[in-house]
Amino acid sequence: MATKARRTVLYSSKGKKLYAVRDKTGKFKDIQQYSRAHAMDMRRKSKSEVAKAAKKPARKTTKKTAKKAVKKAAKKTVKKTARKTAGKTTKKAAKKTTRKPAGRAGAAKKAVKKVVKRARKAVGAVKRAVKKAVARRVAKKT
Image (cartoon, rainbow, N blue to C red):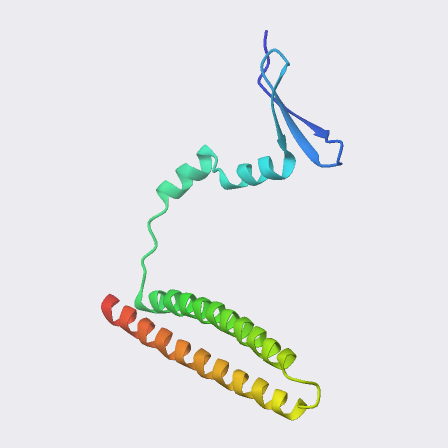
């Protein structure tokens, strides 16, 4: 009598943990990295979990939870844009300072300050724009 297909744990030549899936006769059917197979298992839900979720009533979204979700998304976008602009401005400042001759350190400092000031203004503008967008979304949902 053939048994159920099972996984065997092996190791690759590089030392990575592997899952070897055998068919019912015992021959290797598929070999996967343990990390990938495990992640897929974690994403997949069992029959009992699916049944439990179906029984559970859907969660009502209130104004408060909607606002929180929108704020969280807005914060994420602000952080992302701030990181991008900060990276760009520092690169520009570095380029400007390297182009200047060694005797003009004062001018280089001024250039860096100017660039930083511009970056802060850009971040402020982005924050204001995001706040407006958040306010619009919240107004639409109410």
